[in-house]
Length: 367
Image 1 (cartoon, rainbow, N blue to C red):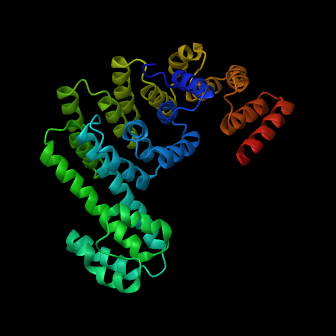
Image 2 (image 1 turned 30 degrees about the vertical axis):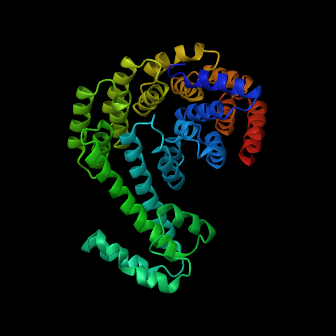
């Protein structure tokens, strides 16, 4: 469907009603991910992780989505397997595996900070922050003394498996923090050696620069990548997200417009541009941008919500109700839609309808 995720998701769902096919299920999950439907996506990714993780062809379809639902451990496990898929770009797999390790490092650090008996390990990590990463392993002897489950020879995957059996063990959490940090560094080093000109690596380095506060350098890196690799589809989108994270809505809007100029059906870019127009209160322009999307038999859920908000802000509560009520009739209602309708019916002086939507909202919140 060339970027039309809502339409694609409808047809994948229809196909699955005739019989379960793992690849079709993975493709549906990938579209849910693009649409930001994370509540529906999470159980789908769990099923694919349990049943298809060792199938690189299928798991590669949804591999990026595990970071989107903030499951860095699963993401790292998946990308370790994706590296064996010869059809998947090796440099992209390495870079994303590095991201997964780094996010896992943050995850295990959070767990370690709350684990009983963690102080000697946190002290070692504080020392390593000033003395260098090599000092991070300084508490390994103490970990071996305190925990029967600890072993310095465990691989990252083996340590994860053991931690899942003993999730409160501080020594294992400490080990996984160290191994995650080392794994992220190692993947970037290997990628730099094998693929020094990788645009994925350069994009990653630009994102790191932005996170470290070097915004101008990051933007310059993106601009260079866009000039040198015009065929990579996500660079303008990545630049837009860089600006969005800093609240630079005008610059983000321009990047998303550039993305849509080249890829008119890119729903992620369209959704992000819609968000920018809402943030900058350009409601009339947002209405003009979104109205054509409602002509589809399967309008995107985000477009439905954003257009209704634009109509409300422009003073047409009736039009906003009409948009959301149509989505409700199509079976596209969720708790947010019910909540919005409840509020709109209250504004319109329709208490019975508002009460009905309140009941539907409360029921949906319990699911």
